[in-house]
Image 1 (tube, one colour):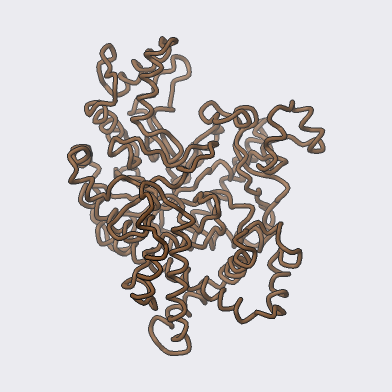
Image 2 (cartoon, rainbow, N blue to C red):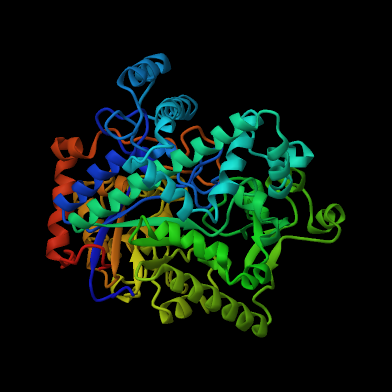
Length: 577
């Protein structure tokens, strides 16, 4: 159980964005190790990351091909870290990839993924020779396969079929006999190249063993530094994932989960009119209940092997899910349609909350009851590990009181928390103590960009409302509302940091860009951009500490953490703060 009286401070850094000397074009577990050390040196006690599951072709950590399998691309792959990897193979493959010649400001996923998988395959060719022996590593690998037998066989067959289909994970486009796990198992047994396919499946297991091994070692290292790791569990799973392919009975693929239209995310006309269509299938909760939520419990168990805390992305989905009767690929058909015209195409169905909307009141009571039951199951599965609920968006009145009753922190984003009557920012002291307070997630503008935009509107042709907002912001930050800065100054930056840390909230988290005062945005929702999920930090974290442009900001935050009483208390190894 999380104790809101013990105030902490942390930083959110996407793993892919990290940089270290000798990396292969993407952040990896050695870079995370350096991030843990960075946190420990600077009084931060929580390192939060985005989901680390294996991604699909769009590289989004929220659109993984497995709810459980970890992404091998985030592994440290070098001769010292990977059993069976020969130094000459390593150097040859790195040289052939020409990765050193690429621009290192972003992740070049096709090159990086190919190189890392090629290196792992080279290691597998050597490692598999010892599988019949009694080496400690061979025994460890066998134990891993046995421990994860509830999900690994389906994942490895799905992963192998992706390769058979030229990298295409859309199982609906595969030959009919392998479009589900049952049929694929029969196909596999009769395949003329069964031996080669079996080797591919064992290689996929090998990659997962290494990934889990490295991340578990990171948790142990974090314990030694008195830093807690916070992971992320997306509410939904990709339609084109091993999970949906293998356990179709748990998912309703006729509907696509998403979010209703709201004021903040209006990236395009479709989103403004209809909302966000994420494409995730919705859950058949009765089927999950019949198995005592085995799939969910397994998912949480694997996550808590690695992390001390985890954030549930879109916890609102446990209460009711905004659902579209079409997949995102068809969004373009509906942009210019009225609801009546859309109904003609969908057979009378429109985007709606399922299993029911919140009105009338009896529906809200039923949704609250459903959500409470599911969250109690999640907490039971998580054991001593802490659960945090991302409860942003159009939040029903019953959600926050309920999660707080369960002892689950929600989210507080001060720049979105407003008094409806006068649009003033809610005072920091009024934020709920059982909260993770932050100025933004990976989807939001960094503070510097937020203030840049505010100043631009203030000095624009219709600047009166923006000027009033600037004054409201200055009052919230305890600054002079009549003389606000016209740029994102060091003094303004410190005021933002101090206000966050002085709030009564349990955990204050800064995006790495907000800590540094930079403008990196890791994802722009609804916008197709080559920089989404690929932007890398300019320097290593250690070099940021040495660079005069950033060192003052890091020291400033470290001192504020001490001043505001957010230093972590010592804890026993393996326990939760």
